[in-house]
Length: 626
Image 1: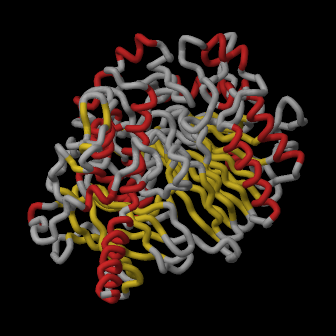
Image 2: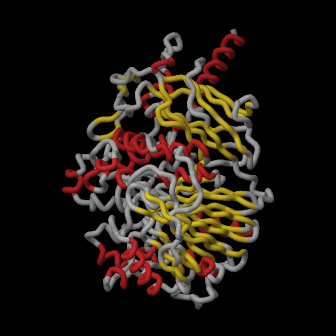
Image 3: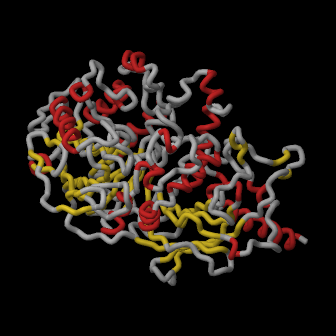
């Protein structure tokens, strides 16, 4: 009798383990009543005697991997009976679990879970399997699957694939790569850095070019992976066949799921996820414009705005957005008791520590909501204001100190918004020219960060930033406190590389000309001592080549994003030598191909190509469109 009971218990434990392997059933937090899924209730709907017909299931949105560790990595896919996103647990007012609490039964959900298997191998043929497993997914989590592949070796390339249980219905073959151990000697790692991919403004060609070149190890995304707007309010998607669905501003859980699904139809985005492990963070538009701890610009924290929001409170909308983000993105939940925490760090051998911040959603003080700009200006240097909240700030400074004490060669800090001061008075003609939704609105927090770096002699710092839809390269300096020579870079504590958008438009005009864009950058570079180069015209990305002696940053611009193509321009290349804590002089070798370089010149290449949308200067390599 005891043996029989043990057998039953073992069987139950095995089934539970298989269900729990799909991290989306407990992500982002199993302890949050509005976000967690009660797995035992889903199990009740499972009928092993009547499994899904594999022919009626499809892998609808490719595969993805992310948050690599030395011995594990997160794998993602979606498999379901329809490419549309599930509405069974979504109402007009947001997400509610459709089960009867009194009877502990579902009353409106009858969709049976789907059984899926996965395997990870060192070869493309998947013969040398190092990890495998069986998991389930269901309508409760939009038929998404997120598993942690284990038993992996550090800094090693792997291939993976999913299949519907006991069938030949398989997903695309994915490729991923683990990170080195923190104490491993690594001589070189390459990253692609992105932000601000807006579907109706153009194709995501920037994602595809590193795939075609096979030029990086990992991809970093600094946020605005999606936008919440209605197409007609922000974009021209109908003219290029890029209308984001649902074609309205999004609020409900279904809305956010559908928006991610639409973005994942972009072939270059799919290719990037399939070939490289990603390390993403969110910015504001994964929820809504100019979010902060207690609200967002659209709501303004007024009763009338809640009514205009369809009866959905700001908390409910944010929870819908957070849940969909974790369902669709290949990232880990950092702490299960903290449902909004996304800030985390990665030690990439002895070479560098990557510190990814959340300067938008977690706990930042009130921001510029457009109607309160004068008020935010008045309090922008208030010591009580924080971009991150006290808990994250304390963690951030500890991470910087630990990285320095362990003698990591570099510290790479991912910030959603531009960290350096950007005085735009000459460009805008404003008396008050700062961007108070970025670090300029939280000057005391920025000063605390710089103070920690300078006072603790923490060197070799590289800040990377997104959000601004423009390219900025600056020496990292504390202008209010430390002397700085803009010609030599003396006095800097590091460098900031801020990147343009994948497709989101230039902040100085959607259809700005190259001549006007360069005129603005001339004003900007002249008005900011630490700003060494800026380009406003090109959408694009940059790659970081990180070695034990230097960090090389290569900026690429896209001639056009209104069609899918493989063109790109090498805009500028920058070097940061070890222990110099500044951009190497002459900056960019004294020559760039677009924008304005302080003390240098802009020289356009003589190569041209007709893209069908005008004649553009392009790079010489011929890349095949995937």
